[in-house]
Image 1: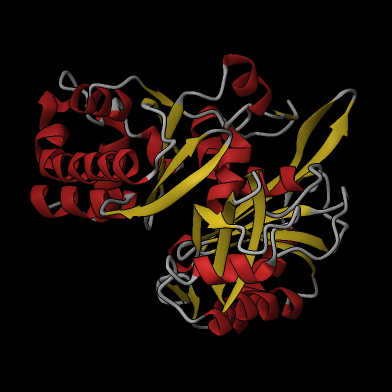
Image 2: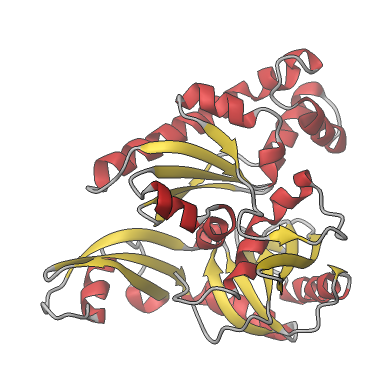
Length: 359
């Protein structure tokens, strides 16, 4: 969803367990992260992307802004994220039934109903044409239930902010970690698999032909991993979280204990990833082979997660860099590990400097 865009805006990442803020400013010929902040949310305030207690979230947003590190946030303009589990994004082939130069909205609505398990009058829909010939077109479609979108709008306005855009998370992540200019130079015949490894939930994004092709949720999260470690080792959650960071999946650390504990979860994860790859290759006629896995989000700090997935999936895997298209002010205390949790917020903040449709 898109209203009016301005360079003077900040990105606001709203998730079940945390709020994150990033503002980016122009410095010389480049863009630089000038402000950031993060606050945790108590369980149940936001659940599964649904805002349960808007009053409490609004107070947290106010605190998040007032206590931002770096430059003071003086703008009210914000670009916020819509919850991944409540949104839909997919590349779709649409027949141009009218045969006109410009694809008609009716053609899109006719086809979109075959892909979204909700009535058209229950969703907000946004789309843009990727390719078009006389009889058909490829579009990237994004949709979210009206009640979810309106609840986020209401929350933002309640917090005294001006919503410039609500954006699907996968689009923000791609904007943060993919260098589109380099992608074009290397050719767009290589598909990438992005795994957004978050604290409360994880998602998979297929990026091909210069755009998101589809997204799907994955059965793993940072919190679940810590809970599994705590339960197995009979230790408290905080110690389990520390063990996850210190030992990771390295066989040489902690006698490989964490790797053994998490192997079942990793196997389950790789099974779902393989199914997603098969689905993509089988159902998207112009699909290119998956050539690389990029892991992002706070869970990318799990030591050796890239090596384990690379071995199991027989594909090169790397840790995504959320500063691919920007830099960070050297005065800000945001290290390489912490910055990974800001991937979505950075992508949202970059949106303020990018022209074009929201999807």
